[in-house]
Amino acid sequence: MRFLFTFLLGLFVSSSFAQELALVRKDKKFGYLDTKGTMAIAPTYDKAGSFSNGLAAVLVDRKWGFINAKGEIVIEPRFDNAKGFSDGLALVMTNKQWQYIDKSGQVAELPQSDKLYDFEHGYAFIRRGDKIGLIDAKGTTVIEPTYEEIKPLVSGLAKVRKDGKWGVVTPNGSVYTSVEYDGIDISNNGIIIANKGSIFGVIGKDKQFKPVEGATKVWAFLDDETITYARKDNKLGFINTQGNWIIEPRFEKARAFRNGLAPVYIDKKWGYVNAKGEMAIEPQYKDAEIFSKDGLAPVKIDKLWGFINTEGELLIEDKYGISVALLGFLTGGDEKGFINGLARVKHNKMWGFIDTRGQVLGNEWFDNAEPFEKAN
Image (cartoon, rainbow, N blue to C red; front, side, top):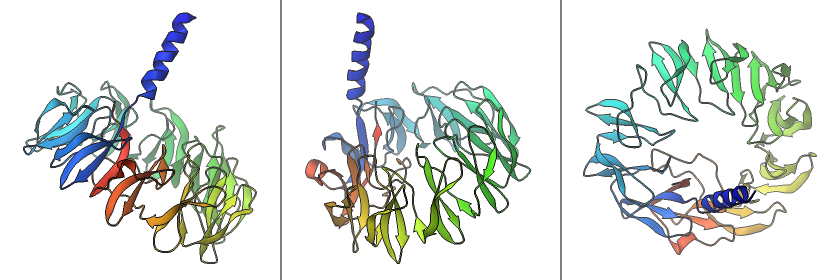
């Protein structure tokens, strides 16, 4: 019992000190900012990528190599191009040829493929001719190249296309839903959105297709949310995971639920509706995004964005841009707003981060900035 307590304490301590770094550009050079606002790695690189799998690709003297979170070169710059690590492997180019390397910089021997793809969630595509399959990071072919198209895994499932129809398989190639649909979208909560022609429905854990009455479009569920938005008769409303309407379609536009609220557009203004269909925050904004897990949402009042809480109180003044910067070849996704207590924003043509009190991280702005990524 004492050993277990010590182990859990050590695990808590190590996770508490997990470092996150953001790729930033200052004075035409790239470096890395930590979540305290300190330049953990000084801006010295002509080009660089965000951290992934504990390493980041950097350009040194026109060659690409990799550094660790301390800024130490761990794989010497010798490549003509490089992508980020995932599952212990990265794609690098030498003499116009792409190949996989491991974290020691050694070439990894994997099955032959007509084109090489990045690993994601433990798997990478493998192509032979016009057919696609999957391999794992050990080099095992888990799905032979038999499909016309495979999409990256979501919630442990991958959608596949064959003979012009879509279905869903598990990573070992087992059929989860038969290849019979005209479209499929897998949600992070495991619920599948599918359509047969103009008929849209949901596929739950029972793997049965249940049409959503009258729906002409259904969007995937966000994260582990149990409500998503759908269109009927050119209006948007909301359904649950069983495919039942819980808020009748009456909105011109809508976005996903989070923290019990969803942005909706009515009479040329955005507001927020709750799960009962009641207007929790009256339509008053030019634009509005979903709430973050921190309980704040970006809203556009005039030309710029501020942040409100779930009560509709403006906690951070509307003076920012929130569009994605996209300066590196790796990004943390396109979610706008707060992530783990920090939001990436634009102010006076410069990029930086603010906390939930509106304080500028490190009191510093940059030419560009990417989202924070785990660096160790």
